[in-house]
Length: 151
Image 1 (cartoon, one colour):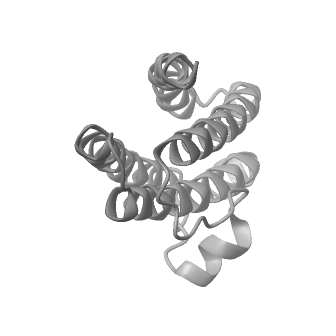
Image 2 (image 1 turned 180 degrees about the horizontal axis):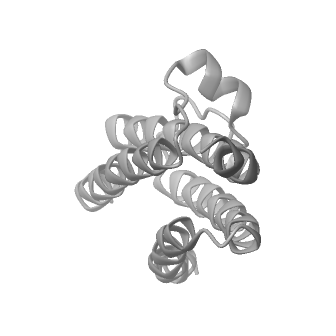
């Protein structure tokens, strides 16, 4: 088992960084949901709730994948803040600003997930590869929709 852990350590580290980034993304989405104002309030308030509910599920799946690799997922906000590649967004009330930030953050998550696939492939880690591939396929469609909304 220790050889498997050593082989997968880079994947575990990347998954913990991804988990941290998703936690920050989740909190940012909650903030957009709570603080959005303007003519698109009803539409965006519901959309942001849809997004954070989806992210909450992904957070759990990522943590469970880390556990499946016989490691411990990060589970404190100081750890998330230290490891996340995403920055905390505060007091965003403008819908277009929120959508632009969501798009940017999602692009960063997709890039990170593609990097994880490369590492997982080199370790024959089909389960992690599958998880990341599912996320990317869904998120690329979301990115197309966000870009269309902003056009």
